[in-house]
Image (tube, helix red, strand yellow):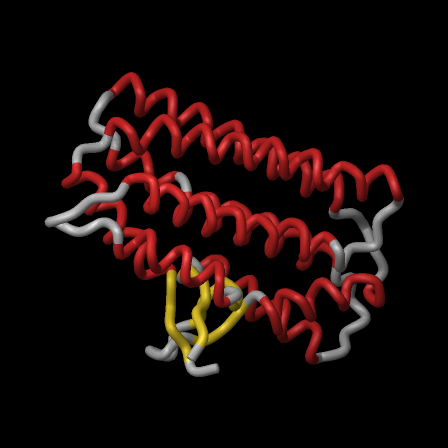
Length: 222
């Protein structure tokens, strides 16, 4: 058995994935880059929506909710700006590695037959996330373990969808150096979001948050 992180794509993203796969399968001479660029941006938006935007719903304090919204908007803008810099008008041949990464390493079918956007987790990372989720129950609450689990999950997602994906892009030295810089900024924003959120939540709120995030961790046949 293996563990995967994965979210259910929206109807829009599902359609974009189908269109891109059909385009590649057809060996069309049409330019691939508009599909790759749009698909990448949409995956980034939905990843942010699933990991971060939903956090706002569990914040009881209006002022802190507004502060969280600002942090999330900053992360979204940083991500979008980075992708706008990195994703250009590449040749079809140069884009194939990106499509291959998205198709074979970033999309899978869960046990219910649903398409998921996500990736396989290493055993240590999966164990850390599992332990953190298990530390939040109606009877017991370990905030530190839960925070570590959320940080581990978001960091693994960033590593996969940012660091590993950008390795498939044909980039010059200057653009390549912008990736870790942006990742640090996004990491900082996510850490700030969790540090602002978790200490203020009552045990019931932490349980709601754990219930929300657990479905993103899926056990699959290896």
